[in-house]
Image (cartoon, rainbow, N blue to C red):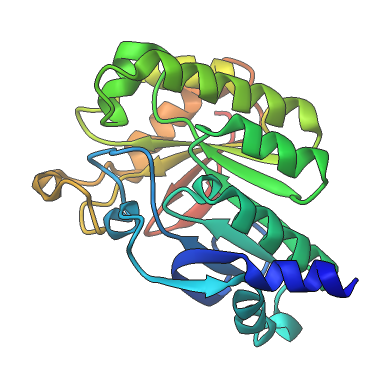
Length: 262
């Protein structure tokens, strides 16, 4: 056991920060949130622009991160690991998940779905209880490379996300599929329709509100207005009409709301 613990202590992760207590990052759970630095996407509407930089924040050994989380352990049920894109630091991510499981916490991961082999390892080793995956647009190469800010790489990106979705939806764990509504970029009703069809087996399909006041990667998008609650509800009803039952919207004003038919 000692060599194993020693090896964990030698693994470091680059993080942009930790939120000790959150009631919004994992529905119906109180958790801590760890933000990994670095992302392989360049979505202009990214709501955590600073975390795109892999050098942002500081490098900590996994055991140091665990000690910081332990401060909140009496009050939390689990930990959400997000970013940036946490799967870009696979060894650190796996080691952190292992340690969190060892101390009795449930583990959630947020991802853009671009690293299916990392997600597969987490699933195979039973290191994750819930995954939230951002599906930013229909899985069509030209569309996706535009919204992800990756010109010429759409085909590879779409293949990776498709594989990640299949792995997650077959896994039996809690899966939250998220779609961010950005005016004039991803607000097309057909986008919602295609994404909803793709993620219909997810535990939860969440249509999210773009927030122009956030730390955007492209600051020129701050001129856009946030979509209204009514606009999100109208898009959510498209998913309901397709037969999805667990459809939600998430807004700054009202948080997470389940959308009912009628």
